[in-house]
Image 1: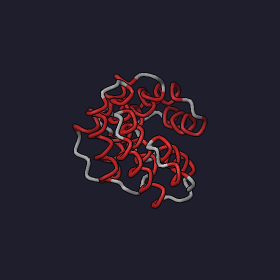
Image 2: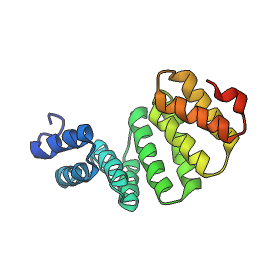
Image 3: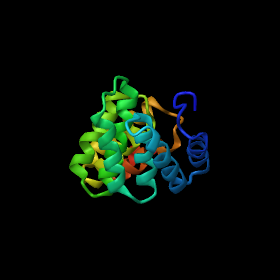
Length: 169
């Protein structure tokens, strides 16, 4: 709230609540309200994009992510979030090749974010590239051995690639 003093505090509180409660439609509505006061705020655009795709509105998500990517984003982790949101939106729109480019950029810009690596693996799976999927999840599991979603996807990727013996990770 201090970073955006002109925003209605209620909208920012609703964004926090929506994150914690997993209510994307509430988060999207709150982000839209906050964007009325700060239309070029990168973090709000990324929030709106993420909430939109989670709420089943990938076209709107891509528009928010594109607006964020048009801004000057000096911090790599924030730029990675914008690419990640765009990749997720494009994946949901079945535009897998474009989604792959954004997902790769997100992982390159922030290799220490397990969710971005997971999303990259999902897109590679949808493109039918089992070897790439295995390597993405293998690398993710090495970097984040306690991340159960990466472990589950790594094991599944090994099975899908016919590497049964290696699937006992």
